[in-house]
Amino acid sequence: MQILFYCLSGLLCLLLLPIILLVTPITFLVRQMQDRQWRKAQTSLEGNNLICYSDHRKGHKEYVQEQILPKLNKKIVPIWVDGRTPYSTLNTEDVVRLLWEEELTNEFPYLIKIREGKIYTSSIYNIVLEGQAGTISSSQIEEEIQTFFYGSPN
Image (cartoon, rainbow, N blue to C red; front, side, top):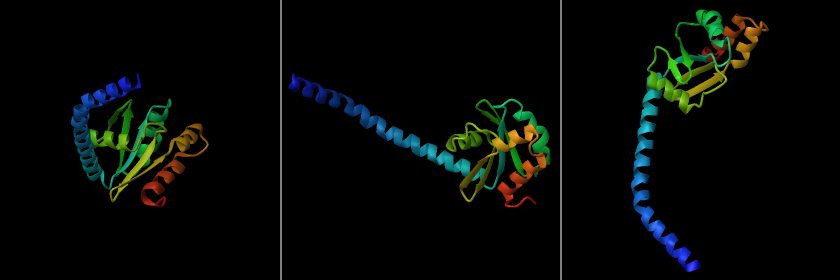
């Protein structure tokens, strides 16, 4: 019985070997292509300051659009994420790849800055909640954002 098991196992391995030998290089090539696309996206986004927000929590979209965005430096690019689709002035594929690679899927809004190939992120979810509740002012939120992007409030 044990000999039969070993024979069947060996036969199964011989049958699967060509498939494994075919799939392995294809998987490697696909990963290489994805890495190249990611490096290209990083290069195209280099130097950008982004605020990425959604309406994941009721009222966030309106609060960000009405209370935060108008006060921000115009060099900060807003990205509205509706479900899984980002809307901004930037290349959509690059933004999708950024959100995917950085695993930014919850706790919106996010601040994102890209400097010398490195990506820095910070969720401002909690301070936006505090702003909506009236605990802190929108100018305090603006100060936090300015500090993240530029190192000092002014």
